[in-house]
Image (cartoon, rainbow, N blue to C red; front, side):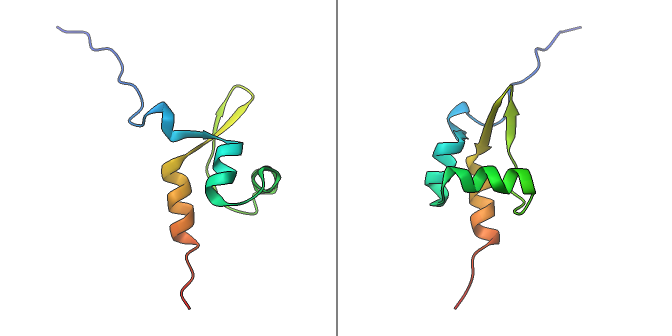
Length: 71
């Protein structure tokens, strides 16, 4: 019988962005992301690591795609 160690997450740590980085990526203010998180105004998933809030780049890309408007 072999013992396997649990696998790490399937995404690289560099894909976790700080609130500042995520805000810059989306082109909004950091405070906007904080308000969206608290009020649940936008459905933007986040990762909580202790007191830190991180955003997966994949989730940001999906958020952009969902909010794409055609002329």
